[in-house]
Length: 200
Image 1 (cartoon, rainbow, N blue to C red):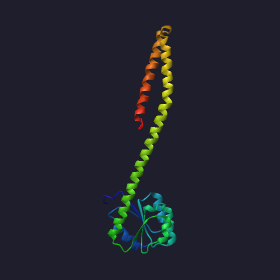
Image 2: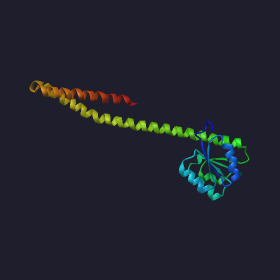
Image 3: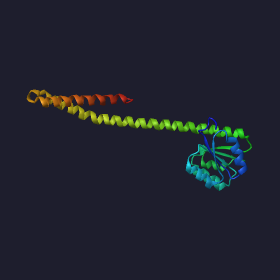
Image 4: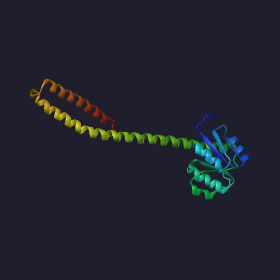
């Protein structure tokens, strides 16, 4: 397998000769799965999501449309056949390649589309990561605001009590000083959370 080992192609054709021709063109470029009809294609699709689905557009129309409906992502689909199927554009935008092209051209077109799909997948992963970070930052900001007010109140009350330290036992003063020190420490940590906020 070549450097494009991350590429998987499901080849769907009911014509053994055409499957062999496409398989020869693609075998060195990617992992190749094969299906001879709609049912076996459904089985392959249920096991995983191949990056590209190469469909013999000479298959019966009902199987062809059934496959396009099943895939649901026309941008992952390459139709390979004789005539341009204008009526199939209702299913979305996908690549149509005439079967008269050389095998190398077919392989290059499939690999180019695979590159596009890999790039889209990487961008989606990146967007998802950014969304998760945004949600985390929003949660941190909510926690910071929710904790800041009670902490301020605890510190203020503790300082007020310590103003009358002469009326308290040594043990009570020590406890209040410990509460104040620990609360100040938590407030400092909460303040550091503010530094994580992109706007802060």
